[in-house]
Length: 191
Image (tube, rainbow, N blue to C red; front, side, top):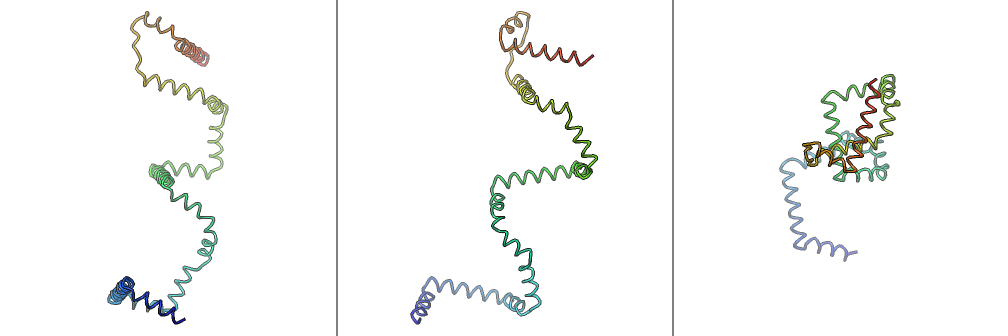
C-alpha cells in the first residue's frame, strides 16, 4: 500500500504535473479573490437552496428523459445532421413567413372547423380533380414540351414554303394532330 502512495506522490511531483497543480492553485486564488469560493461555500451550506437545486435536477421529468435517452438518441443524431438542420431552418422560415403574411391563421381555423374542412375537401376531391390527377403524366409532358419549345432557338416561319418544309417533319405532323385535337375539344365545350 505504501508503494502506491509513493507512486502517487512521485506522479504529483513530476514537472508537468506540478505546472498543472500550480495553475489550479492560481485559479483557486483568483476565484477566492473574486469571492466566488465564498459564494459557492455559502450556497452549499444553505440546505433550502440545495434542496431546490436538487429538486430541479432530479424530478420525474428528468428521470423520464434519462430513461428514454436511448430512444431519443437516434432522433438527436438526425437533428444534428447538416442537411436536417438546413431543412428545419427552411421549414421554420417558411412557417414564419406564412404566419407573418396572415395565411396561417385561416388555415389553422379551417383545420379546427370540421364543416369548413369538409367543404374544402369536397371541393378538392371531385371528379374533375381526380381526372386531372389521373392525367397528370400527360399534363406534365405538355408543360415540359412547352418549356422546351420556349427555351430552344426556333427558326422563324416566313412563307408558306417554310411551313411546307416543316410539315415533312414527323414530330411536327404529330404535334399538329395533337393541336387540332385540342382545338376540336375546345369547340365541343364552347357550345
